[in-house]
Image (cartoon, rainbow, N blue to C red; front, top):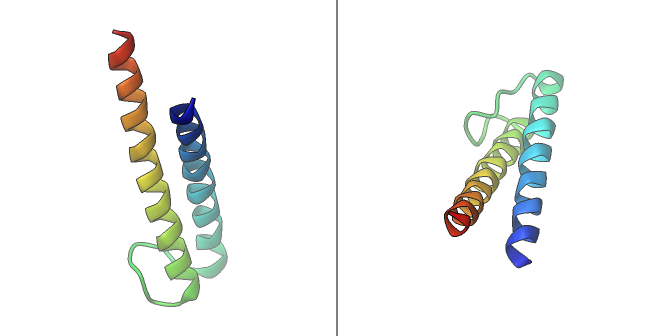
Length: 70
């Protein structure tokens, strides 16, 4: 049950992090490829990093669940 909650929140963070950062980019002219270069760019970078970490956690949980079922 706990793994399901962590998986759910990981996927939510992934979706919102990517969507938010991708929306901030065109509005601010930032790319979010590195920390610095303005506040908007740094926020984008942190959102992208959070999304990447969250999707890695989610995929590890999915793999663990698949291996248990198999």
